[in-house]
Image (cartoon, rainbow over all chains, first blue to last red; front, top):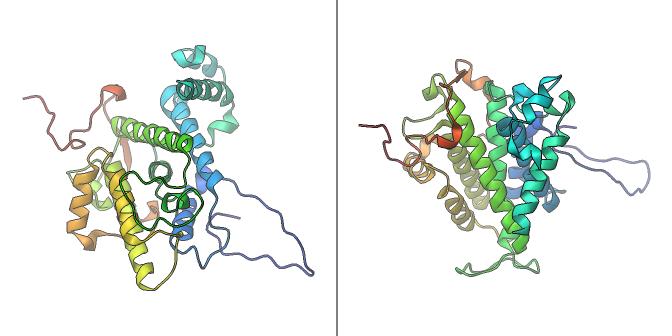
Amino acid sequence: MRPNTLHGVITPEACIVHGGHFLCTSTIQDTLRGIVHSFVDHAKITNTNHPPASALLRRMATFYFTGLVQIGREKFGGENYGIGVLEYWISYI
Amino acid sequence: MRITVLGYWSIGFLTFDIVTDQEVDHLPDPSTLPGTLDLIAFCFLVILGNVFDFRTYTNAIGDPLEEVEVHDQNGIALEERVNICQARGVCLELLRWWESKYRVTNPAATGSSADAAFTTHLIVAQAATVLRYKRSAEKDNREGAPGCTASLLSLQIDNVISIIPGGPLEWERIHNNPTEVDVKLGYNADEWAHTEIIDRELQNFREYDHPEASGVDLTPL
């Protein structure tokens, strides 16, 4: 299910429901909308506050920076990668 | 020092981790308008990370902060606060990199002014939209994050905007033109059908400084 999708859980008998969330680049616009709605309309919406999710966003920032800026999107894949990555000092750590 | 080393390690490990084509597919494509908007939306969430964190408006035991004093401590632990600052810096660098590498055609169609970088405009405009939404919700007595009022939210947004290059000027411009504040959250590429992303002349982004970023014309005389 995409982020910011109105949904409910219906079960034929009393249950404990277990689920999870993940962040996806291609639906990040909906994530933004969902986070803002949860923040502004917290009392009307359930499942609104997830402090660990902000840590995931911060890790994604590192991933984006490394992938886009330090390595470059075009250098991924195939044989180019091994050569490209060694152009950066960080790869020698 | 430990945090710095950890940062280098995380980048080092990540560099080796994202080696497959499957994983690179998770990166937005900044050379396209939808990819750029995804990147900016993501940076918006990280740059304003503490603003949307419920703990910003509560104390360490979860009670709403009644009065915000200069040295008040909110519910975010010091270590995490440092992490938030670091991630914000990473995203500001990402945006600077984008500005050094790409630009939009027909920026006026996106609501951008000549006085602000494209990314700065979108981040600031979205912050204005969030503040407008919060004020509207407050009028309707809809309760948001515990302890967060529109004035506290405005204070937090002001703090973040103040460190975005060109942010305060753009924030003031939008503040003086409230009709420009959008009511829609997020960025919709379909609305900017005649806008494209094109490459700038190749340059080293680390030496790049958008002339409008500081409000000072850096063009050599």
